[in-house]
Image (tube, rainbow, N blue to C red; front, top):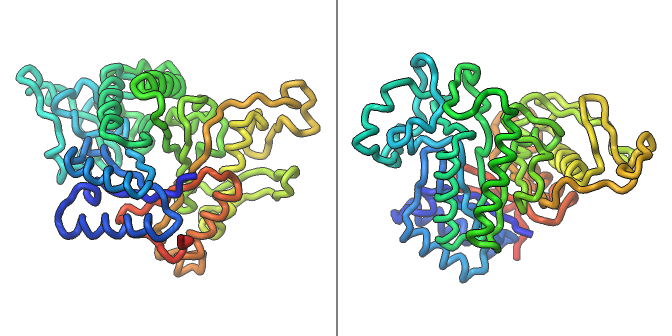
Length: 387
C-alpha cells in the first residue's frame, strides 16, 4: 500500500542549495505524513539522467527511513541515442520545423562511434509536437537498450521499476512518421504486448523479487480496446505487478462517458471536459472501477452506450458466471497534485479539496496506494494525513 510522491532527476541528484532543499522537503513528508514511497526519475524524455554516487547515497537514506523506492523509466520517448543510434528512431521524409524539448539537456546524448558520425544527417528524424524524439517500439535493438538500462537500475538498489511512455507516439503528425522496424501492419498493441512479455521475462530473471509497474493513460482505464498507441488493457496480463493509470481529471480532454453500474448503484456519467474537472473524485473512482472489473474478467466488451458484464442477467454462460481474470495486476493510480488556475476561477474543486477527493476515491476502489504528480516537486501537505 504505497503512497508516493514524484521526484525529478534534478531534485534527486543536484547537490546544490535548490536540489538539497527539495529533497529535504520531500523526505520530511515521508517522515511526518502518510507518504511512504518516492518515484524517482532515472531516465526522462531526454535520456538517462542521474549520478550513481548521489543516487546510491539517497537510496541508502531512504532505506533507513523504510521508504519504498521506485525508479521511473521513460521508455520509447528518448533523445539520448539520436547520434549514437539514429537507426533506432522514427524518421520522416522531409524536415519539419519544430522545437527541441531536450536542447538544454543535450549533454545527455550518447556519443556516436566513428562509423556513425554522418548517419544522423541521412534522413530527418521525426519529432512530436513538443520536439521529442521517439524510438521505434518494434526495434529489437531499442528494446535491448531499454532492457540493459533497466537491469542497471535494478542493480542500483531500487525496490521497483516503473515504465512510462511505454507506447507508440500520440501527438504531432504521427501519420508522417516512418518506422525503421515496425511493418505498419502488425497491430500496435501486439508490438507492445510482446515488449511487455520481453521486459517481464528478462527483468524477473535478473532479479526475481523486483517489482514492475507501468504508467498508462487515464483513457486506457476505460477502454477495452487499443486507444491508438498500443496500450490495450487486456494485454497487460501478469507482466506488471502494478498499473498506474494517470487518471488526472484535467487530462480527460474528450470528457468521460460511462454507463450505469446497477450492481454498485452508480448512475450513467456523461461529462464534458469542464464537467470532468468539476468532479475529480467521481472521475478517479469510476475510471478505476471499470479497469478493475475489466481486469477481473467481469466486463467482456465496452463501447459507448453498451456494456456487457459477466455478472449481468444478459449473460448466462459459465464464463460469465465464473469470470476468468485477465490480470492480477494491482491498481495504484497517479493523481494530480497540480491545480490549473482556470479551475479555481470557475469554482471547481481546487487545492486540498481536489487532492483529497482523488485520494479518497482511489482508496475506496483499491487498497494498494496512489502516487502524486507535481513536476515542481511541491505537494499539498495539508491534504495528507499526519503520522
